[in-house]
Length: 411
Image 1 (tube, rainbow, N blue to C red):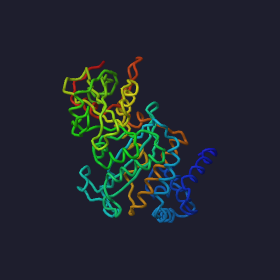
Image 2: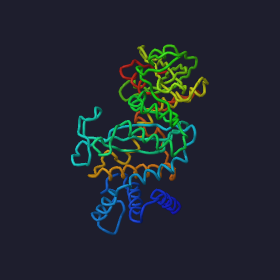
Image 3: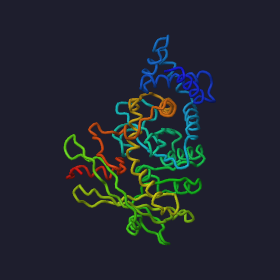
Image 4: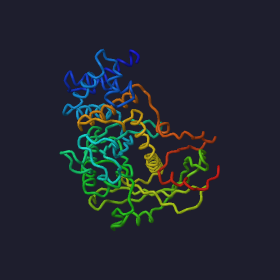
């Protein structure tokens, strides 16, 4: 690391450790340095990368002991969020993603939830809620906050409470700037619950969420299912986007996806005084075998969105959420996060917070800013065809699945 970068690092480490004593400050700095050098979250690898004069075993023991300090995870997370929040602008998309951290071989990690307890997991697991700021223009990702919890922890109440707590922290830190884009799993678990709707109304969250067809909304004075309302929405606007579809083993073809979209005003039954916007997107792949395409339906907290440019911006960002989620995982796995294996719950939460800080330092300060496309790029990806039409290869999973078994011809 050059002298100028070293100065920036020490300034960053001091801000990250604000409010901590001398010993935990040194631990914070050492762990971030060790992660940067080793590209690992394993404490032994971090200790080895520090090139300390003392034995690795002694360094490992020192780091392990101090990483278990009570309150360290909350302090690191709060300080990092404070730094990042200043970078969030009014229209910055903040992608919300929840995933299980599965530990196939672990049995003694504290508060680990047994296999089969969480429906989406095969192995013992924790849950993580992550918020990432996404720039839809250049595709860069900036970690905002990551929160890990266990259903076996003594302070656990409900998954919804854990997710909502993360949203409130980010909303407060950014002073309401940014728009939450809930990934489909978060949307399904949160949207329509009184917990979310009441908080979204009271705290004035700005959000866009994938809408289930069974959610009830108030439309033109009548309570209707979202599936009924979307049939009544006109789609006057159109756009063509592009995706890669496999048409032969190890061969992908750039394929046009034709979309039309529109919106109507709706309201949640629990919050009648707040108008929302229901956005419906029809889509088709002309070169693929004809099948019934289910429209994509989104709910936006922005009232009366009728302008084409504003609608197109929301739809374009929603199209990119699945790839943003994949890129989040790739960011973590660049440091082998799935291999983390520590015995105490507090130590695990600290390591996650310091991994977030390490990624932020690389992205925002060292300016190593790989884009979503680079994080998720297929090894077989071809170069786009020559042409002036704007191209976006980031589309919802519903579109991506059309490739399987489709008869696709080159454009």
